[in-house]
Structures are given as structure tokens and as C-alpha cells.
Length: 69
Image (tube, rainbow, N blue to C red):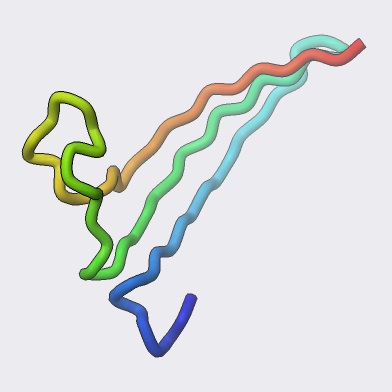
């Protein structure tokens, strides 16, 4: 975070929960909350088909599974 340019920066908080249902398998669920500065904007037509998009998403959920052997 640049304290001199806070309006051009962002913060992200991502808590994550995980379980290991069996050896070598892990499943995670995470939620991210983004806080953007006033000057953060998407480029024109960055989201295909959405001509009104002017700000990135604030809330993101992610489900991830991984296996190792």
C-alpha cells in the first residue's frame, strides 16, 4: 500500500478453510474481499459484453481441490 497514492491502491482480505477428507486430498474454500481506491477502474470493454463495467468485483469465492500421490 502506497500511503502517498491510496486512491490508486487496493487491499485484499482472504480467509480460507480447508479439510483433508483422505490422505493426499485437500479441499479449500476461500472468500476474498477487495477494497479499491477511488481511482481504480477497469479498462473499457475489459469484461466482454458488459459495456457498463467500470469497477472490479469486490467479493470473490473460490473452491479448490488438490490431490497428491
